[in-house]
Image (cartoon, rainbow, N blue to C red; front, side):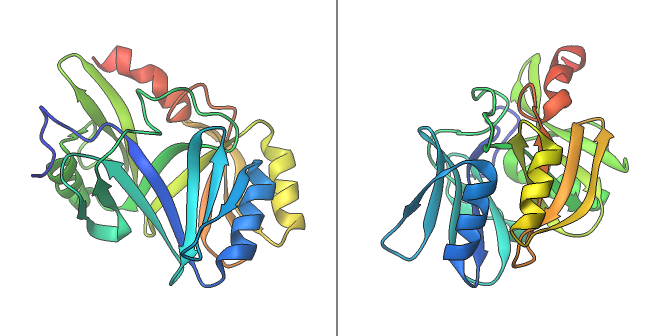
Amino acid sequence: MPGTPDSPARGVRRVELSTTHPEPIAEFYAHLLGWVLIAEPDGAFTGWVGDRLALRVHPGDPAWHVVFAGAEPRDLDLGAAVDQGRVLHGPWAPRPRPGEPCWVELMGEPADDDYWAGELGWQVRDPDGEFTLYDTGTGDDRRPVAGRLTARGGWTCYFAVPDIAAALAEATDMGGAVLIGPQAVPTGVVAAVADPAGSVFALLEDPPGWGGAWCATHQAHA
């Protein structure tokens, strides 16, 4: 069954990246973000920060896939999905460590909000806004789980880094391209980067929690 306000998706189960040549792309992210990289039997590569999976890179057409934790496994629009299991990344998970996913943001339209609210049981904080937060939780304990920015591009994953300038220099040295930033926004100091195969991701400097500065807003919004 889809998520409901009484049983919402509370975070991300895992993030996946499909790409034509997984090994060099997985190595790019592992060097940039400090992962332990493991080659899987199916040709995929998994990047780990301690005991938490940061990213699974597997063969396929280039695309990001955000998999949210929920009761009923299913595919969603824009390459997203729901799977059973523990939330690894989200507003109730431990603070993101360097190299881990620390936020997800939908590049979409306000008209998309009802779909994600209906599928995942989220509340839309600023309907029809240029930007809105999607909140999850029950009762008074509602926290930002994702954002939606009016733009085109689907889901974007942010990764935590301790020094964004150093990370951007390293990404460029390894064949990536800086598309935006670094710049200060309400989330924190962010930058958008394309990996050597052209897939776009974001970096967030030293986030205090899931969603960067947004993690503190649940108290004011409750």
